[in-house]
Image (tube, chains in turn yellow, cyan):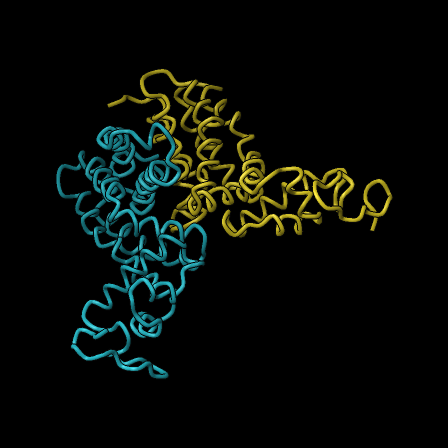
Length: 211
Length: 211
């Protein structure tokens, strides 16, 4: 076995690993993050281990720690990618007619949950956040700064943060009932029908009259 | 140590335990169910053990199995109590003016989540259902037959099951964001304000115009 440079992998050393350690090389960071998402999705935060992540990525556990630090940090970095579409979500709110914002946001969020590739990191986050307070804090911080703050900034009227959180609650709840609990008929309903049914409630939270 | 009959507890026997086994006696069933809810809430379905439940209830593990069968069965029985208020939930939908149904249902469901005593079994279910497919199935069956079917039966108009599921999605999502993820400002918002904000969306699902 040789690494990307064509040399055999360096022998394992004590202390902080050098970049030439087992499994290091181009793409190692990305491989580790992919393995971490799979590990967290399968086992949840509590049972996920750095050893398991390293095994999945084909690298030495020390390298995982060297790149990403302790488990909490790996989790935050691994799931952060799930929030990359957050910018699109906030743009969905204002990128068109105000009265279409609910439908655009519902289509965007439920669409992300529909695709197994984008669903897995979300499931990993949800499983971990429901079971573990450290993971819940990571999720809380990400959803606050990456999603809610951005959507709220585009709303006019009172309580924009609460409005955006209740719109999110409708969408997160719908995704949970459809993809996690899998309750029927919602689990098998046509996505377009679900969007059409959910959009008015989301719209009301975003732009409707306020009590 | 003596049991409720004043006799010392019978020695442990092989096979099916008699009712006089360690910890048996009046209230043992209820003690086991209480301990089971605490065990599932703290550890989730996967990590919860019959041994842990027995320890919490102060009984022999064989007695737990004798009364309730395997873990799946204990889980179903232990969490079923969380659905006892389901009748009240379905009555909330029709026990008053139709235009007040959304507020009554929101008040009822969010009120159950507000009280730590009634919140614990719900958290136990949610943690377990999100992490484990067996627990998700138990939850799915209970919520379908105990809650959704009853609420849907009281709705007129098309797709009553889907309507009731999307109303539930709004409420479950709100409870998750407020009590599990604890996102601010929703987590600290006044309950009456949250009910006032959520009720119109729930109302729309239950009785509003349908796409």
